[in-house]
Amino acid sequence: MFNIYIDADSLPKSHRAIILKRVVKESEYIGECVFASDRLLSDVKEAQENHTAALRLPFREKLDKTELRKIKSNIKCVVVPIGSNSADDYLFENANTPGFAITHDVPLSNRLVEKGIVVLDDRGNTYPSLNIKERLSQRNFMTSLREMGFESEKNKAFDQRTINEFASALDTIINKYKKEYC
Image (cartoon, rainbow, N blue to C red; front, side):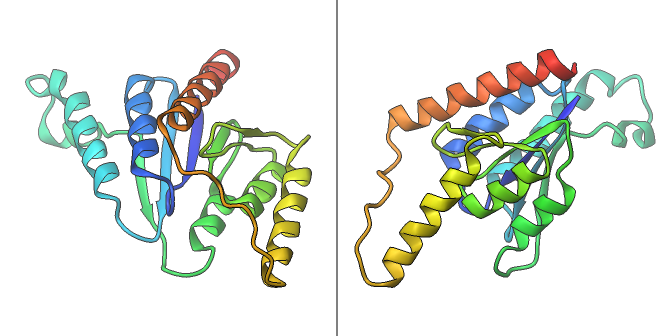
């Protein structure tokens, strides 16, 4: 089994829906899918509750209530204190291999990659140790230009193509981890 760690503070709802659908489908292979955010995410909480109910359904007539309550979804919604980098710090402290993370936060990606965690960003790019330093350097350079008053190009908005690229990359990484760790 492997785990998935998600920096959910700014992850679009469309991406969370894709992740949740895939986690429910592949739950027998995934240890935990942890969404870390500084607020309760109602869509994640609802998916967790629905998944738990679906897992318990076949056992309703066979198990007593105490045993039935032990059956739970592997979807976790962790609410961290509000503050700069609190979700990032939680993910860094709790992420372990085998597992991968999903975030668009480049400094967090760098920290996780240094820890041996592969990172998938919200546009479908995967950051193993080979290219994260270059990406961090680009990000820091663009930040310094913005601080000096230069306009920098913004990321393009999420369109259906970008969402599909993310979904495809998620499928690819989950299938890779299933073959490697299950």
